[in-house]
Length: 296
Image: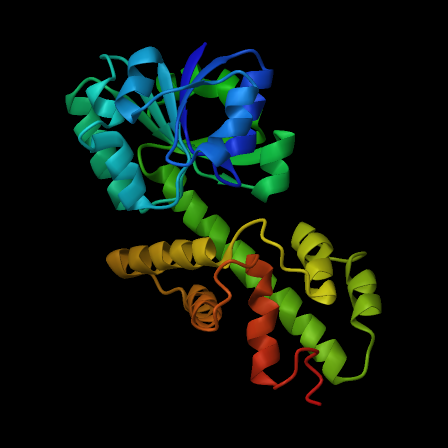
């Protein structure tokens, strides 16, 4: 299948490489050659504009940072929409506001172009291994058309509803992830403050109902103070802003999500934007005045 792909960051690059390995022809665009180079070496064909990408492809994927980037790539002077033929499908795998997704989908439909919103969860490792969780919004027949490509990228693929539903579910995902980060960090802090080995604490919790993938992977990161990014604080900060905006739009009380949004604000203010979002542990450590959380 001829596929357009725009997005060469931590998530996009391994996703594109998986599509190439599956035998699909990729046409790619990016502003930074160093990020595109691995895809070009693997057989992708570079194009000078998103418009040129869409002109070559039947389906175009976008995996970029925020709503502004998505809108520019699709509707900019040389955006995808200007090269897309009627029947073309744009699959946005970025995390953006649900209302913006619905607006973009409606504008594309007026031009005969289909859209799916398909944000992902699982981080860099899942992107590389092709095991992402993909939550998809849009028309069911279009979802079925793209499903074989989703199967290359992920292992848990769910069509969750109409346009924007995928982004709503991603908001839900970020609430659960953020609050679980907070719970793990608080547990480590409490163990340390009581003189209990947090390594042993984590080991004990892994065998019960408190056990989780976040406790396993990110709990270890917190213990090691290893915050090499898999999913950066600045992106989680952006996602929580989307969550809180939607909560205001829908008059939904989300006190836990509000706490996580403030924790991400604290990390951004402390200059930790490029760290993994499990660095939320740092926000708690700063409250007790010690990087080890022991008050000394």
